[in-house]
Length: 177
Image (cartoon, rainbow, N blue to C red; front, side, top):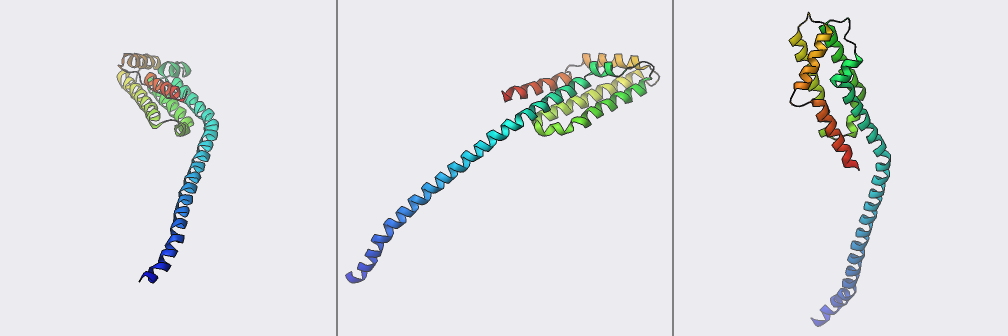
């Protein structure tokens, strides 16, 4: 029986150190490859961030411009209420807001969902203020009366949606730096 164990013992003496060396090499190489992969991934992110940051900043600038352009003060200055009826002026204001958003809807891919939601809420609240103002002045009113009512309703509101969205935009840009 002692002779039967001798060849097995000899094989184990050779095989056991080989397995230990193999496992050590395997784990070392695996860790080294993972670290190398992570390093390359970080380098790619840094390189991409250098290219994307200017595009993101441009998106923030465009969205700030959209918010400014749809603010009641700016909107009412750009679209002249003279010689128009309130319903025509109402439709023109809503059309202008929709156009601003149609031209800039692609910017949402560069900003956080929270910011985009704030901008959409600002747009919808502003449309609500314009619609409410149009209902209050009636269909026979002149556009100037509607424009004054829009300003009054916007300013008298507890929260000014455009300002709130702009604040959210500034907060997000501040996180970049």
